[in-house]
Length: 64
Image 1 (cartoon, one colour):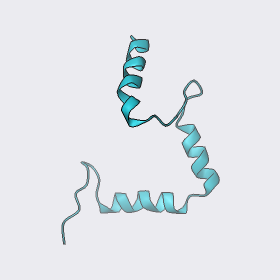
Image 2: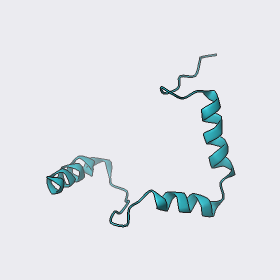
Image 3: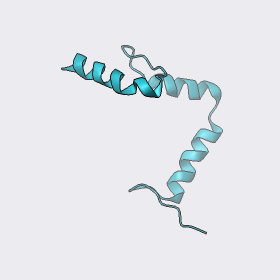
Image 4: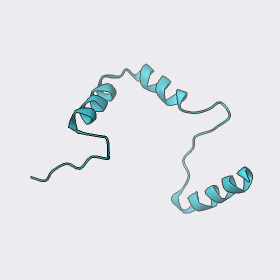
């Protein structure tokens, strides 16, 4: 059996706490958490893989 590799600062206990949080979260709480991660001035959308580079380019142009 292979050893699990965790990112720096993570261990099995932390992974289990995160899993427990999401496995016991209500649908309403999950929705609220998702919505809290998006600023009112932003939109989240799916972008086809072949257009990701172009979208990033447009965002970079707008930011500069």
